[in-house]
Image (cartoon, rainbow, N blue to C red; front, side):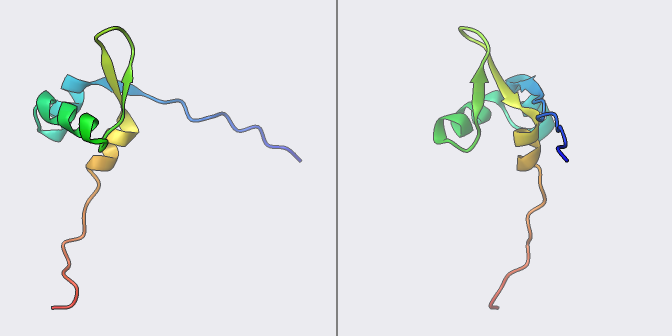
Length: 69
């Protein structure tokens, strides 16, 4: 039996929206994009958008446990 699963529909947001959520400047996001830490999608000659889920991944908790001490 085949199950038809719809592909995940991406949601995008502006750099300003992502910067507000991450509490960083848009210049920081542009540096992260240039460094390959974050992927941007061009929607016009001068317009960039970010995948909401990729931005959310930057907000994921990081373990602070130190091993070997």
